[in-house]
Image (tube, rainbow, N blue to C red; front, top):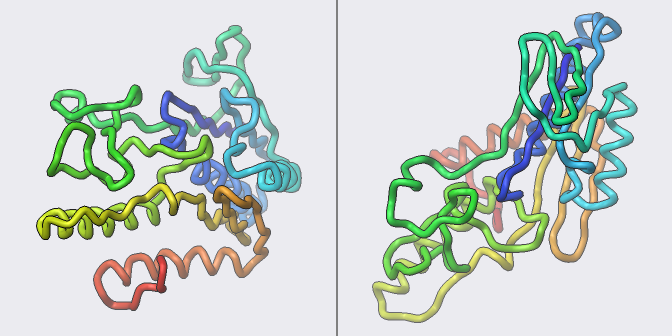
Length: 246
């Protein structure tokens, strides 16, 4: 039996839900290709009642259908107490016997931040304003995962948001040097954008303040995710032009 666990903390934007689902779906397909899937019981477990809820109701319903399609069981709504060599123990002392446990914790701020004079959120991330400027400072910016993002309850730390914050910070620093009050912020651009690889396909997930959906992409979705990885790497080193707006 294989169990995959997703945990939350004080900062919900730091919960890595997408990779948890991707890992489970890819394990299913790996075992299926080996012809041994029927010999394993896969279970996804998490302390929240509805893991993945921030993707929206439509996506949550679609995700539930995918779990059923792949015969992946759910064990939700119970906080974990401890792991043993052969089981997961919950707060009510109930147990799930397991051969393999995959644990993905939510992120907290780095210990370097804890020992600094920077203003931190409850989860240990740096407090910033919309422009990325650190609260209480006039010349310090924080971007990406290290920053405490402010926004809707579904706000998530994602790579494309981190890149946008980086470009904004560079622009804002330049404007400060010019003596200009013009600034660019990240909050109006907040969205969830994810291609969730399943091993034999993928699902495109999108959410902003106006809409939320999950679109199944059988077969070609897996290729798209692989292509996106190569695109991301090549644009970083200037070997491929960046898609406008990305």
